[in-house]
Image (spheres, rainbow, N blue to C red):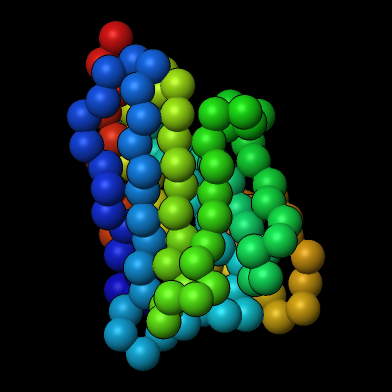
Length: 129
């Protein structure tokens, strides 16, 4: 596993959580689009957000727009990626996976599960009402 997500936990509706995605030692993912997916109970894994290799462009699922913010720290050794989640809702509950797609020089895009080259193990987010 080349990516490790962390930061999940229990939050109340309306609360916030910040997820982090770190790369394994020696991996930087500098030419990769990075993203977050989630899988809620009984549902397929779905796209949440993505960010370009430069960090200058982002894409969000409609469910995340206005509430979630994806960012990447290009000064960190491994280009750590974050997902700031505000105004959480019970329907945000699920396992959140960070992901990477090899995309040198390409613009940011909405990602599909089949696009992904590297997955993290996931971190559980539970939002109570």
